[in-house]
Amino acid sequence: MHASAPVSADDARLAFPKGAGDKVWETLKEWPMAAQKKLAFVASDAPIAQSAQSALMAQYGGVAIEDADIIVALGGDGFMLQTLHNTQHLPAPVYGMNCGTVGFLMNEFSDQGLRKRLDEVEEEVINPLHMHAVCVDGTEHNALAINEVSLLRAGPQAAKLRIHVDGRLRMDELVCDGALLATPAGSTAYNYSAHGPIVPVGSDVLALTAVAAFRPRRWRGALLPKGARVTFEVTNADKRPVNADADGVSVKNVAKVDVWSAPEIEHRILFDPGHGLEERLIQEQFA
Image (cartoon, rainbow, N blue to C red):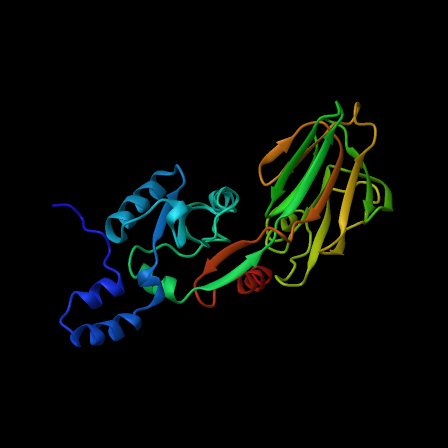
């Protein structure tokens, strides 16, 4: 038996005798919006995520991501970031369910009541960072980062970085293992592990954080306006090589890296009520 195509409210209205269809139409208009939305399910390679995808598609159906009203991502935070990057050209928001080891950007997994949950979601809109890296050999690379752009030493010696903010020299020399610029959404990730501050969502602030700073030893970083453009220059790059990374996109042996917010790009993430990014950032500080 072949599965039939979903019946629209207009089709249902016309299928009834005159007058009766109007009553059905009024009932259908009261359906939760999520019950009428087309869902696409994507999953990481983890067996648990693959099994979850099969179970959810069997229960709720599924369409291609290009045709979806909501994209449901199954995995951990890494897969969520990958999904957001891969679907940034699409209008559909992404709702993540945790089937991985870290789930800061994910909702709790359940194969029951999904459409009801989607009808009650809260939406967060975040902007990524744009990285423009120039390597020692002159090649140039561009990438986007939802969490952070980081620079890390690639050899046994500490990196030496010069930092400009909006074209003005702010630090002539930072001797360190590395440095990073994090968004509010990414401030609980690598930034927090490097003892950087957790930044509230909506604060229009970026966190500039050193990784194992040696000189100045007590420098803990800076909070910068979201519109700031940060330039990292690597001094003595031949002897002290540095790699740059933007959400897993790595560029080796960089000489200069410019980083700025990209407000023209919006990532829409859906969360269960009371479990949005703002609440998670607060919880993380009291964990």
